[in-house]
Length: 180
Image (tube, rainbow, N blue to C red; front, side):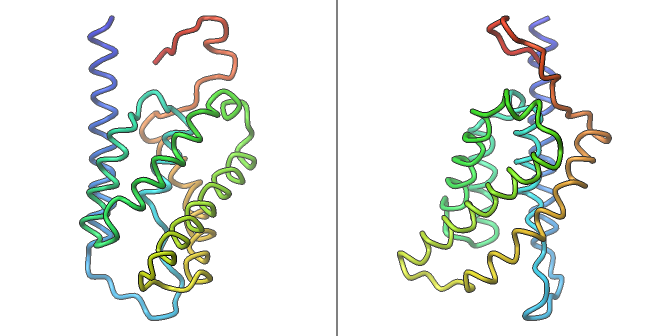
């Protein structure tokens, strides 16, 4: 029983790490984007938020921190800033696991959109505080609706393609232990 749970967790960790590596690799490809065009969605952020909303017990915080730190390094962002903010956001969502289970999907999307907006504002504010050259706040906030539009397909991929589903809202009440 315990070996099965451990192998399931390790398989989910490897699956998430592989998907994250694929997303970063695609982001590193030299695809030209016209200046002033519509920004690309942050698929890595969509992936981690959708996964944490669905099954936070299958995605440890250290894995999130390590993968986002590596993404910061590979994408030449300030090391650790985005990773730290994403860890804070995922832990905030993790603490609201029980209410998130019963939320309808549009409410979940609104909550995730609020988290994304908070992340962009905190990231922009921290970089502004240290006078880091960056795009304007409006340009960065434009990425939020684009990323939020990519959230439902990512959730669909997790749910239907990979089997990462929310637990029923009633499961686990009174048991005091997390089940996988």
